[in-house]
Image (cartoon, rainbow, N blue to C red; front, top):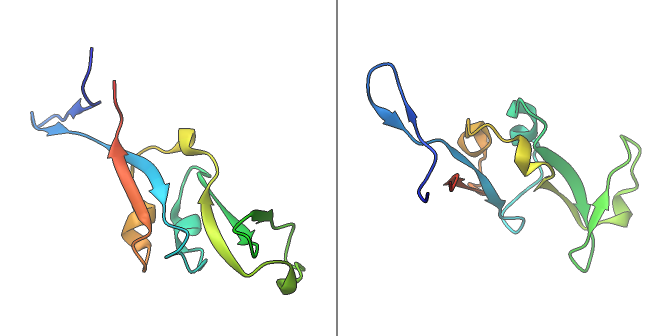
Length: 102
């Protein structure tokens, strides 16, 4: 069976949820808005090193000179429920969502 996952609503209309597929770290400003609206813990804020490597942030007292900037990452894609709240609140439009393939 091929196709995408969809749901038939009580009205009879069909709805195809879209789940987080990618996040453009080049556009991300690390504001954390998406992190605050995600109800499932899908996202994680990390530092971005000079070579583009992710540096895990340990807490409020992180030294700013260890990384170039902070960016959001998709830490647990499997927890996404397809609400698209992250994309709706992102001021830089960093998110790409896609339907689940069956």
